[in-house]
Amino acid sequence: MREHQAQQYQLISQYNAAKAIYDRQQSEVLPLLRKKVSLVNAQYRGGSSALPELLAARRDLLSGEIASNNAEKALADAWAAIRYLIPQDVK
Image (cartoon, rainbow, N blue to C red; front, side, top):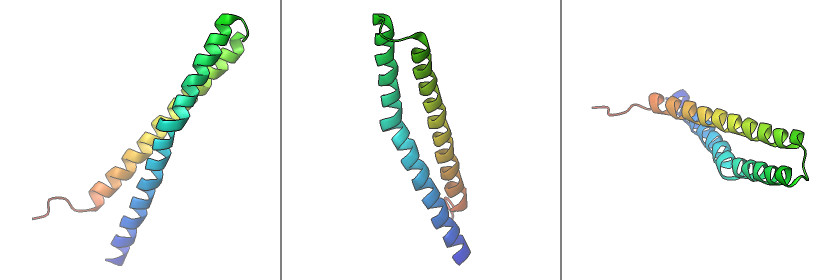
């Protein structure tokens, strides 16, 4: 019983950590990377930025989106582990 309860607490802790990472990616990291791409794109069109800088900004955005997807997967994995560890609809 204690092992089961300890496992529940561990999974809930993992879920909370994964949710915090995912929320940060969605609310802070990706919006900043999108703004950076927009800014560098405007600078490139205005002639004050070079193509490699624009490509680097886009690459950073793609890396951020991949990190966000990985965080979302970790969140889903943690949720599934909790969902199937705790009995549901037991009659």
